[in-house]
Image 1 (cartoon, rainbow, N blue to C red):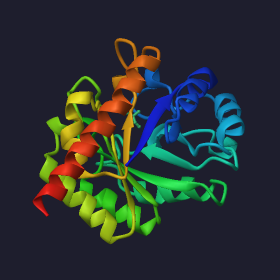
Image 2: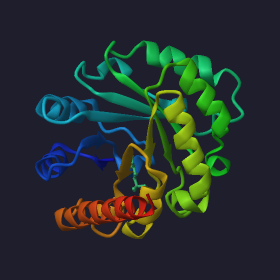
Image 3: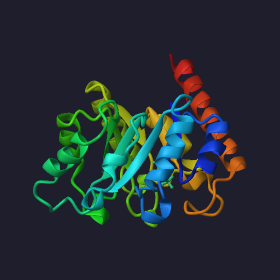
Length: 238
Ligand SMILES: O=C[C@H](O)COP(=O)(O)O
């Protein structure tokens, strides 16, 4: 299970990259769940980090996505939110057209908002179908409204486990996010996503605050302990 941390600047990327997180994700939390940073920040972070750690970019919501042409070649993956697309006919074609503009080797991340009713985003099945059609290598479940609880306020552990099974059958990676905190980690390891993605849990006060290296180290340690605990339980049952 890999740990992804969302950062908003080169300074934060250096901090989390230096702490050895598996994946660096760039987004501006002031602009929403998948708010984009400037293309200058994309360039600075990707050029500095791509050889040591995969760097992903949040490009905002499909309704306002911009600067696709400025995505650096060495970017590992990009994600685009589907807020307000739930009732917009033809969103799949629009998304496909945007994705076509990306540099060839950039991976695509499909995003399902667990609080789709708040985001007015497409259903889980619709996003899954799109992910397969557009050959998205990773499927991320996140939340749109960060004031409406965590991902577990909207989807159960069982629903998320089933989703992981389905994605693995289709050969896709499963990334789980959505205001995850340390106390959610036993459920997270139960679900076994490939990637655990956080920001708020490792920030001073809230996700729009600054990353706190002590919180990051503590979260990573708690993830390791929860994972070890789960592995021991499985072994003792066998
Ligand atoms: O991609 C992951 C998100 O940035 C998670 O942010 P969050 O932990 O504040 O919900």
